[in-house]
Structures are given as C-alpha cells and as structure tokens.
Length: 238
Image (cartoon, rainbow, N blue to C red; front, side, top):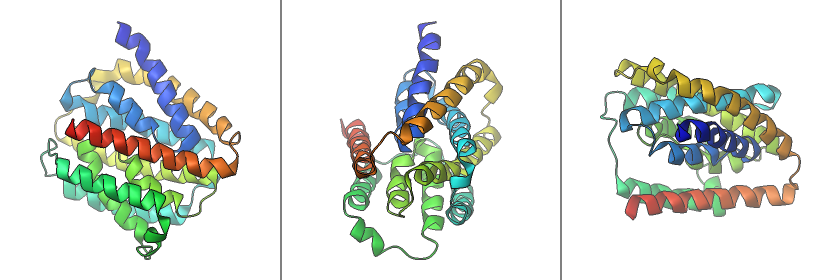
C-alpha cells in the first residue's frame, strides 16, 4: 500500500526533471521501479510510463520539434527494434556499459570530437542503437542526450525533439514485449496512477525551462549526464 501512495509522487518528480532538462527522469523512475516490479514487467512498464511522459512533453511544445531529426531517428529506431526482437531480453554486458559510459562522457564534455562523426544521417544511427539497447536496459536517454545537446537546439527544442524521438522507441518496445507474452492490462492500476502525475510533472517542468539562464543550462545538462553515467557504472560494477 505504501508503494502505491509513493509511486505517483516519484513519477511526478521524474516527469518534472525530464520536462525541465530533457534527461534524467527516465533513469530515476527506472531506479525506483526496480525493487517494486518483477524483472519481466520492469522494462515494458517503464516503456509505457515513458511513452505517456514523452508524448505529453511533445504535445506541450509540438512546434518546437525538429522534424528532420525526428524522421531520421524514427527510421533508425525501427531497424534497431527489429534487430533486437529475436534476442533474449535478459542480455547484459558490463563491458558494454563501460564502453558506453566512456563514449557518453567524451561526447558530452568534448563536443569537438562529436563533430568528427557529424555525418549526414547521424540520428539514424543514434536511433537504431538506442532503440536496440532500450529493449534490454530500458532508459537510453543519457546515450542520446549528447547528440541532441551538440546539435545546437534551443532549450525548448532540445527537450521536445528528444522527447519526440523517444516516442517511437517506447512504442516499438511495448509492441515487442507484448508479442513476447507481456500482459499490459495486469498493471492497469499503476498506469492509471501514473498518467495524471506524468501530465502534471511535464507541465511544471516546461514552465521551469524558462527559469534557467542559458549560460547555466548547458552546464546543467552536462552535469546531469555525468551523474547518470557515474551511477550507471557504479550499479554495474559494485
């Protein structure tokens, strides 16, 4: 019963963080869900919550979506999801996590390196890789964030475009897990509790975007990514 009471407030906080900075909320929510939900339901349920959250962020600022990025990302995400469909969803590798962490920190703090891989169709590749990994680790926001951040998007456009690109990832994830036997309806109560919290959290997060000085916004994004990467590595190796 206590979990049912606390759960909506955690969802609200995660949505607020994602709505304000574009990253971090998904991993926070996943961390809270881990001890509550069984392993078989964790990733698909997280996908459902994130789908509602990201869709809400898009609807609040739909004109801020960079359509070109969204199209390339969605095509890549489609291929990545199809590639991951036949693979056992319990797959995990601590070595891949370490490599991922190094790449994320490099692209975040040394964006000049990112320019060397700034080829046409970059977001096609990012979409494919993140969609594939999302089937196994759930939250891939910190992986994609450096690419969006270094694409010179305005604050609102950064949050909204990134959210829009996450929508197809979670849709494909839910479909794949459903085809694999996951029964979504069994968790309807948690979903009903999460929806209003997601809407309110994203609304408050959007209002908070304008409260940040642009000089500090980039630093907040970089520090957020760094903290999430460190947490990911500690969880994998400790």
